[in-house]
Image 1 (cartoon, rainbow, N blue to C red):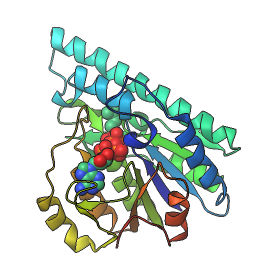
Image 2 (image 1 turned 120 degrees about the vertical axis):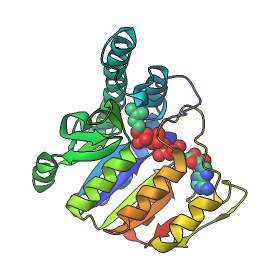
Image 3 (image 1 turned 90 degrees about the horizontal axis):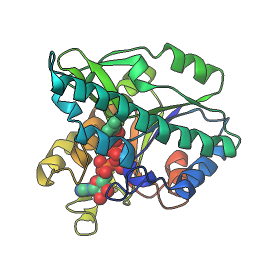
Image 4 (image 1 turned 120 degrees about the horizontal axis):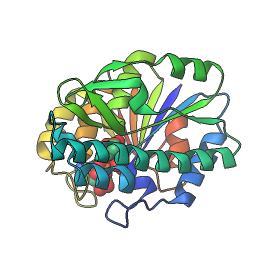
Amino acid sequence: MIIVKVGGSVFSDKAGEPENFDHETVGNIAKEISKFYPEERFIIVHGGGSFGHPEARKYGIRKGLPDEGDTARFRMIGFSKTHQAMLRANAKFIEEFLREDLPAFSVSTSSIFITENGDVSYGDVEVIERLLELKFIPVLFGDVSVDLAKGIDILSGDQIITYLAKMLEPDKVIFLIDVDGIYDGRPGEGSLVQSLRKEEVDALIERLHCTSAGTDVTGGICNKLKEAKKIAEHSEVWFVNGRVEGRLSGAIRGDGFGTRIV
Ligand code: ATP
Ligand code: IP8
């Protein structure tokens, strides 16, 4: 089984208009997956992109829920609105997969996970396991979450994958991002790291300037690397360019162009 994370920067322009969606790119991703399905099983997790991040930021969801008052009501409305924005992104994903005759099925993240300070503290993966047995392609997404410490928070798609990797031991986890892989430095400036051992990840994180860009509320590339290090305890991890046709197929086959963490 392979888990594919479709980054928000792949299916939308985070700096662009709210809720912009790149149908062509997601359609191509579905086409690539259809070449390997049903012999290979897949779980798809997509990020927030221009759907979840602007709403989460506007309503200060990561600050949690105060006991009462106007701010509490404001955040609760924002909690629901952020989730609705993610449901709209998710519906677009499912449509593109169905168009390719792939039985994608939406699994609402906030209904099966509870967090504590943004990390999964409880997750019910039973329905995901059953869907996989039945050859469905479960499609989860970065979402809002009920949080044991803060009342509410955001659960990043990257954190979801770490939990799923621990519970389901996939053969491979593939992160689709909008650049060719992980760079030792800024993308385009530093060199592309084609192969990395999990023991080398911390040193790379230290060398990078890890301020998250624009509207991102979940920590950008360094959060991804931190999670990738944990995931690498359970499976091989790839970072490839999700906007370039053929790169996902390469990572699925194992001879792809990008960054491989073992
Ligand atoms: P989302 O969190 O919405 O799902 P995402 O998974 O696409 O988004 P980002 O958090 O946007 O991922 O992180 C990917 C971005 O990180 C790329 O757009 C890339 O330009 C940027 N980036 C910054 N530094 C690096 C680096 N050293 N190597 C690779 N990408 C980097
Ligand atoms: O883009 C964030 O998920 P991510 C989800 O995978 C929201 O980090 C709602 C902002």
